[in-house]
Image (cartoon, rainbow, N blue to C red; front, side, top):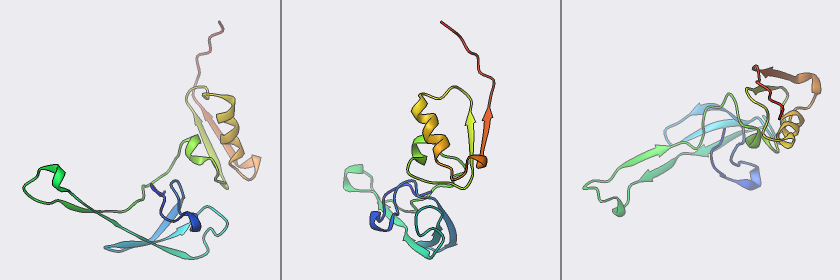
Length: 127
């Protein structure tokens, strides 16, 4: 999953789901899993070089290369907004914050039969 907006025109934004197909020293190749052109072409995404600045008061300069992606087996309801999935599994360890969140969670999937719900035991209290 992308962690930052790289190219909004190509829909490469924070939360875009990808499959990394090739890892290189300064970039990587991936296929999109979401959007109109999902899985069509390989996308080459750059690594970002980060260096320490003079304001860090270090006697040396630190440099690292970072890829703007994270391994993602799950995502929050808010992060899934605007995306469509073939299958959705919902883990509800406690009641949803609001009915709107639950609606977003259930409406992200193409087919209602592709939703699996996993709820832990809730302790309900009626006031």
